[in-house]
Amino acid sequence: MNTAPITVIIPTYCDGDALRRALRSVACQTLQPREVIVVDDASGDESTDRICREYVAQPIKLIKLPRNRGPGAARNAGILASSEPFLAFLDADDEWHPEKLRIQMELMLAPGAPLLSSHRKGFAGAAWSSFNRAMNTRCITRCAILVANIAPISTVVIRRAEVRHYFPQTYACEDYWFVAAHVLSGVRSMRMDETLARADKPAFGTTGLSSRLHAMQLGEMRTHFSLWEKGVISAWEYAPLVAWTFLKYLRRLLIVQLRNVAVHLTDPESNRMNATPNRGLER
Image (cartoon, rainbow, N blue to C red; front, side, top):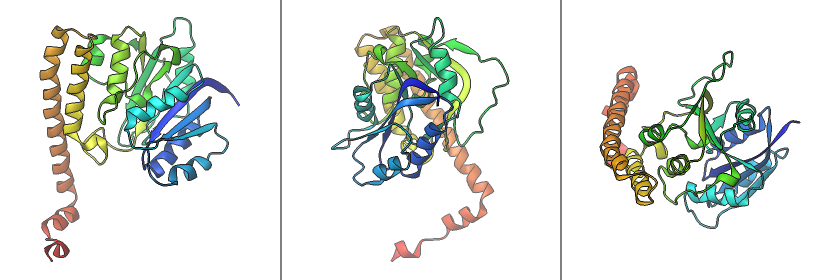
């Protein structure tokens, strides 16, 4: 079995089948990680233990936090417990392409390699792309990372020795803060134009944290303010970002509204149920 000197860190909280899918995608990698750390953020039951035991062939280390502290704190616990020179992050509700670690580690171990790398992420169960063309990579610039989260955390691999910042203990955009802080601190970063990770839901506007548009908006504003407060970005960079994030928020709201209208137009049964009073609630 071919292995790579990499630790995969998976934070989880009551994720059930989603965690099982994430672990299956790690187990199917053509280049296997030497360490997998699952951090249970105080789920309060034994489901995480049972799921991890299903993958006995995997080098899984399970950490159970005594109280719920959020995904950032869970990832930090995984970083501190890791032992391999490279770190890869995978959210429990995401999954990887089988070639993800092989392709990304080739980049990370090549001459002139970046210290942090990422790639595209698909949503709503997007089909995997085929790799029948040259792999395009580009540097992640200050402007690019400030105007958009172009490196979702499930796409990131970083040299462990280059971790200069830890995840903030917040519940929205803590992953964006981590990546942005490293890129803006001068950690050489690159992004591959291939989709090697995906979620089975849209980027926002559905169930789960991604549906909380207000939290996303506040998290993004908090991230930019924190970066300015720490001197990572200048006031000239920070000021226009306030307006930019607000415009993105309005765009997300519009997309969600249009998506809901489309669902109602194409699903008459849903319209009928929504129009029918719930007699149980009336009682």
